Length: 282
Image 1 (cartoon, rainbow, N blue to C red):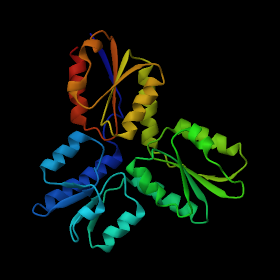
Image 2: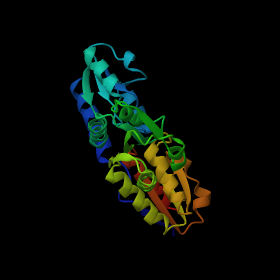
Image 3: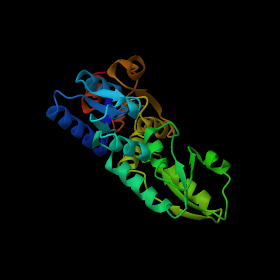
Image 4: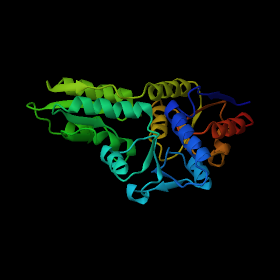
């Protein structure tokens, strides 16, 4: 019989819960009014399909939101100038930005107003990163690896500020700190990585050491889900990333005595439960 070890941290994080609760409340109170979201509210296709069926409109750009309409800011946040533009047009804003992301935006703003240049560890295509960069008025550099950081030409006569996308790998961030400290630069170091993200990664690593195969559940566009896959594979454990039950490699999993199960921060509990039920019946 196959043993399944499920991570306690698998599934929705606090920020996702808050964002969806805000959207649900708005849907309930404004049944006959159109509701727009600035991009996907979270990175999970099944959740997004459910809201589309409820009539929620996902706007690809701020210009698609009509003046006076209800506009929900996604959990990842939006660039500062986008939010200001929406307010100028009379959009009724419901800010569902994750509190951890909002805190990162404000701490970056506070620490770069004195002319410091932001060095941000993050993914260039991620919506949260675009928002964080917009809060640094004195200039920015973005890197996604230590190798990319080392390619940046830093000036000892300038001041810098190091921060990270909230869902990034803390170990790599710490290596970035060590590298910058070796250069004798004036750098302010900000702790913007969400503790829940690190806890989720540590639990995944711990489980990976005990199982034959690890299943990570979540949207393929979800950055924190992809990083769970990376940290598990970094342990040398076979890992499969799935969005739904149908994607499970059941024939391969039948040969495993133990299987680990975790999920990204935007993965609904009902999907994780359904996958666990299938695994336990192998």
